[in-house]
Image (cartoon, rainbow, N blue to C red):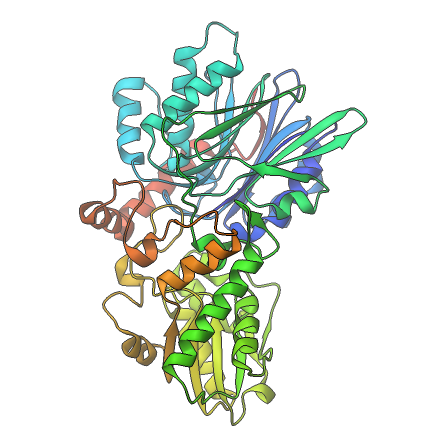
Length: 511
C-alpha cells in the first residue's frame, strides 16, 4: 500500500506535494519521492528512504521547481528490497520523458518484464512492478505517438493498451514532460484514487490523491472518484480531459482500506471510512452478544488508533464502558507496515504502554482492526495481563486473514498468517487470550456496503475469502510468490544490483 499525489496548479507545487505526502504518511513509511515539472519540460526529482519530513529538506524543496508534480510515499510490496533504487517515482526518457508513481501491485509483472526484454526492447533496472508498469505505458505511448504531436486521445489509447496487458491493482499518477499530468485506475478500481479542484483567480487547479483527506487539508474540493478503468489527463494549462479506457470495468474496491489502511476522515468511492468502522463495531457487538451472552466483560479498550471507532460503537452497542487503556507514542510508526518481523515485534512495546488503572482486576475486551501475523496481538495481550487484567478477550473488526493479499498489502505468505490452519480457540491460545472474536465476512461486507448507502455490495476480500478478482491468481502463483519472497538471495542481490547502478539519482534534473 502506497500513497500517491498529482497536482496541476497555477503556482509552484512543491509545498503542496510535501504537505499532501505528510497527510498520506500513514500509507507508507519506507521511502518518499517528489517530481516536479516546468512548462519547458524540465523535470526535477528528489527521493529518499524514510519519512517525508526526513527525506525533504529546505535545499531539496527549493530545487523542486514547476507548477505540476507528483509525489509518492512507499510501502514495500513487490520488489521489496528496501533501497533507494526501489523508491518512486520512476523515470524513463523515451518517449517525451515520463515519470510515474503507482499504488498497488501487479500480478503479472514477471511476465511483463520478460516481454519488455524480448519484444519491446526496453530495459527494466529494478525488480519493482511499478517500473514495469511505467515501461509498458511508455512503450504503448511510443507506438501511437506521431512525432512530437501528443493528443489526449493518443494518451487514452495507450492507457487502454495498458489495461489489456497489465493485471492486478494499480492507481497511477504520471507526468509526460511538456504535456501534463495523467492519472488512471485499474478496471476493478481495487486501489482508491480521488480527484479534487481548487478555484483561483488565475483558473482551476487540480489534485489527484489516494485519499480525500489529502484534498481536505489543502482546501481542494472533492470533485469525484476516478472510476475503474478511467483515465484523466490534465494539460500544463489546466485543461481536464477524461475517458473510460477499459472495455470492461466494475468497481470492486479493496475492503482492507476501510478496515485498516485509510484514515477515518477519508471518503473513498463515496464511502465514509469512519462510518464503515462504526458499522463494523455494531456488527461485531452482535456477534459477541451471541457467543458470550453473559457478557463477562468489564471494559472495552481499543488498540489505538485504527480500531477506535469500531471499539467505541461496540461498547455503546453492548452497554459497556469504553476506556483508553493504552497510551501511544506518536513518534513510532505503524508496526504493520514496518519492514521485517523483528522490527515489528520490537516496536510494539515502544509504541504502546498500558495504563494500569484501566486493567487491574478487570475482565477486558481488547478491540483491534484485524489480526494478521499475531505478533502485535500477542504482545498487547501480555501487556494487559502484566497491567493486572483478570481476563483478556480479543476482538477483531475484520474476519480471519487466511490468504495472501497480492494487490498491494504486505501479508504475502500463508506461514506468516496466524489464522492459516487454526480455529478461533487455537488462535486465542497462540496470542494468550481467553477468547478471540472475529467479524464474519458477510457482516464486514454489509458494514462497508451500508456506509456506501447500498451502492456497492461487492468488494475485494481475497485475504479473507481466498477469491482473487483478477482471475489470474491460483495456488501455483501463490507458491511461486512465497518462494521468491523467502529467498534471501533474491532480496540481497536485488538491492545490490540496483544500488550500484542508481547511486546519485535521488536528486537531479531529469531533462
